[in-house]
Image (cartoon, rainbow, N blue to C red; front, side, top):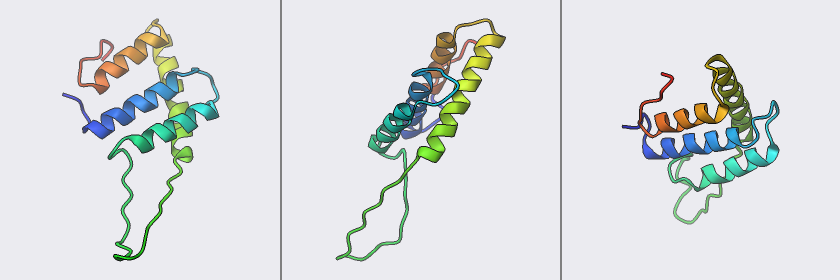
Length: 110
């Protein structure tokens, strides 16, 4: 069983996807932009609660997640790289285990 509700599971995969794009020390702005777009497409990944504006008022909300995504991706880059180095494994192997864990499986390195 996955440790997250489905929107959380999908969100975790988006973050891993974005973090694994280049595995550079600096986060690619395109990866952040794509992750932001994909997160906004996952129903329930981002929840914004506002007071009801009334029956005739239209509410338009735009959420910018770049200050959350950039540091999250940089942190994932760093952790994946360090774990791969410590366990003498490839970064791809670590990412594969992480994906398996996200989906509720047993990660081999845990």
